[in-house]
Length: 105
Image (tube, rainbow, N blue to C red; front, side, top):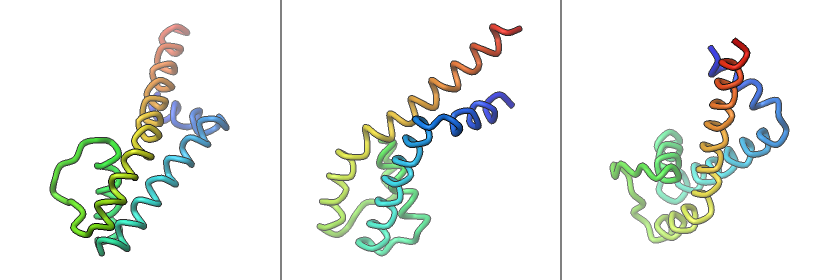
């Protein structure tokens, strides 16, 4: 339950909201580009964008076109820091909420 409350308070903060919007834009750009360049479905394109930027890289998909490979290089360089910052910020916010709740008890 505290996780959902933490997400709601996270979204109410304008600074956090802009980080979320920026992350969503980066994932949308990747999804659209892979859909166009590689001809993948929307779900596969989104999946590959998330897997790539979170550095998981299962290897079940990989760009086959030269344009897709070049885009991936730039996509990783530009998007990796933003996505990892987003994940770290969400985690730090959640940890802060948990700590404050324990302190109040």
